[in-house]
Length: 157
Length: 293
Ligand SMILES: Cc1cc2nc3c(=O)[nH]c(=O)nc-3n(C[C@H](O)[C@H](O)[C@H](O)COP(=O)(O)OP(=O)(O)OC[C@H]3O[C@@H](n4cnc5c(N)ncnc54)[C@H](O)[C@@H]3O)c2cc1C
Ligand code: FES
Ligand code: FES
Image: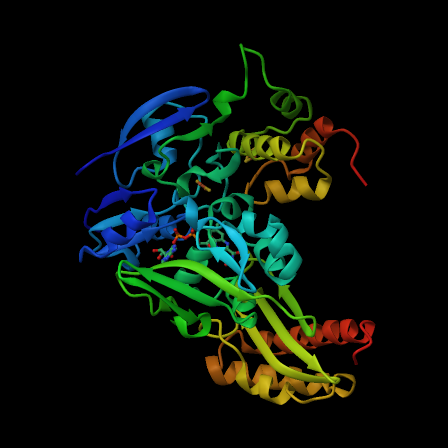
């Protein structure tokens, strides 16, 4: 079967990839680029474990074909820490006990990161909306929301 | 499922050329319906030769006003639709519907064109778009045709799109000041389907009378379609004297006439009646506030 050629920037590095017709962004990240922070839960857009940031927006990488993404930019959880230092959002998740089994955490972090890139001072409602597509079976969400709120400063009126 | 090839292009003309080739081509936009079908090996993808990715065609991502209509490109995402100043200004009902679709991730990728063409009974944009009397522009290599959306969607998961055509643009007539609208919704997609229902209502008010009513429920009938009997009953009624109970009851009855008695009917019939009353009440209040009742 013919492969599709795609130029992709992932966590700041450029790649020229050959991908199959049914290859999802999730598959490319995990299998070609070995970025296994991206998790596969439901495979149908319901759980958010596979969330990455595509051209500045949170998307489910299980619902995108890599062949659709020529000249796109992707950030995964591996792209958050810089020079061996955790990004403040990651530290906040640790400080607020927002991680239990950890399966949902990469997706949660990417949804939260996408929100903060768009709006550095979201209120609680916006945080909840941003996390609507991310399921967590362990924490009950409260600690996750508090972790994010600890970075957003006082809520706007 | 047999193997297909993936084609991609940034040019509308190239996409139309692929569609005209005579092979079995399936269009791919945001993929939020199609990739679920792919994961579940749906019959909807059986026998296709090519998947044609149109998600990077920029000219189909515009929202603009032209000739007294709002034109929405088929590749506009739900996020873009609900954040756009023109949609917010002219069609708050559409913004309301788009904002609660799926999740942030789904809204960032899912498109207006995909929602219409998938034509699911639960497609959230269809009731408001139908109530707002949208038209669709369908383009093939030889030219375009324009159809009312109500004629385009012909059944559950069915449209009259020809194999060589692509939905390029949606056109909504800009509302004149005597038009009023209300959108109501209960339940979330994640909730079991019985708890899901929506309603879009658009009316004109002339000399204190309802005219030109359009009432379209979502997740109530086999596919979203106007309730013509309720519309007829509503037209020429005085806004100030409307029998809300009667309108709600009629809507429940027409829904059952269209979908048959189902296990969900005992819940959905009164639920729809209550949405109809709420929508009418919201409009009546707005009309009164404008001093037109
Ligand atoms: C987890 C989840 C939650 C969801 N929640 C909701 C919800 O709450 N409400 C709701 O309404 N929907 C919901 N959806 C469904 C879906 O997100 C929407 O219907 C979306 O708008 C589809 O658009 P798309 O661009 O992703 O379509 P795609 O999957 O790319 O395409 C869908 C269909 O339309 C065709 N098509 C696409 N564009 C065109 C075009 N321009 N011309 C002709 N044919 C075209 C394709 O060939 C395909 O048959 C949900 C989906 C998921 C996975
Ligand atoms: S694996 Fe993608 S949303 Fe669940
Ligand atoms: S920490 Fe276990 S699923 Fe969220």
